Image (cartoon, rainbow, N blue to C red; front, side, top):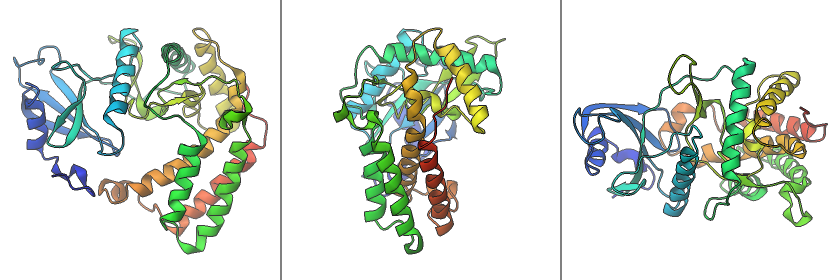
Length: 343
């Protein structure tokens, strides 16, 4: 019986190895917990000579947080990953074992993927950014072929309105900052709603397609050019959603405005070698950044009972944290009222 408050408390080494064994995979006892907060992820080495061990001496198990996604939504994530892999887009997706990619062991759903090494990309290198732009365009070409039936979208409601309402109704903000944050977050969301993409009734013509949707530097691994499979590969499709193409670009930008504009230009140079990019989407970067800030705060607050979160997010939820958020959202309000980046 899973503990609803701490559903991952059952994840002892014996549990992980038993989950592998139920698929006919046998670990040699070496397990390593990998960096993950939303789910729990482990690297397991397989016993030489056993099933799959020759092709995959080590595999990665991902145990999904109960209640976050439905089985249909996880299956759709896996199907999208496999579709991308079949088109030779460098995504690390789940292995199909016993005819399926999603498995269950004592109440927890999990998947098994091949181990894939790599390091963080050098985003200061123009060739690297251009290369990533090309691969994102290839991903989007596949993503545009169909629509998700079960996965949600990057939208004003799920990324902004609902997280804000939950934070305020759950009493997560200290009283001395609650009113100021409530006011500035509402002002920010009012500005977001003024962009046509976030108000479908206005008939926005910007396309929505299947995306990675959480495409930041931590979810791209880079293989050096002197090794097999050189270049970028994308990991962690757990947050894949529908949305505008620019959602998979803006989180890769960093630094001052001039630096971000240069980076965007290089990314799009690569992207447009493979797929046309709608320049109207550049106006959505700051609204999307604003929504992510509100969504992120609610995400951490919702998970605070998970012991991994207080240890990883020191200072979260304090008055100083929320004062920082008030300041940042105020800057976002100004950013949404200025001329967007150009490339």
